[in-house]
Length: 114
Length: 114
Image 1 (tube, rainbow over the protein chains, first blue to last red):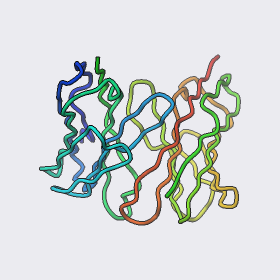
Image 2: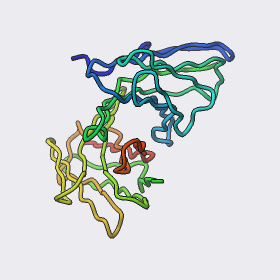
Image 3: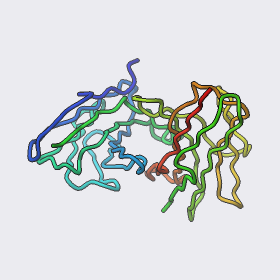
């Protein structure tokens, strides 16, 4: 099992550009999450999904959109990147029910917006 | 709603010394508690968890944490640290109801030197 993978690992964008971050998991997990990690801020939840075709807002959703067209994939989109979105982005997944408490994380995507 | 406070942002220690990373939480409902570890340039990995039962939980690499309900704390301890324990440690809390999010503290950087 590859677990949770993220593409790309690094990206530099100019202000106003758009991009999509891809998260894939091969553990058949129902739940998937997108976080951003900033120095001294811990991890903050951007959006999450409790199943294929469903998404919900987290703590810091503004400026991001997500889609969950397939159970194994969760996409995070930035329509018009801003320097404030410079961050490390982590995807995670978890199983429902008793297993929902344990989240499995991808290796992260380091995004710089200039 | 839940919140997590990690009381120390950085903890420098010498190899083979004991260490305690402090975590306090607040919640109006019963919670699950977790410690995650992030090694440099990697994603987060679950270190240990408290779900129910014994208030003292242990990890495979010598860390332990004790759930103290009266003090709303979940401090992480290790009696003798190694250089390889150098990492960032995140305390996290999750409400027991389905659909509640995992809330992370801001992290504590443990630096072990020889």
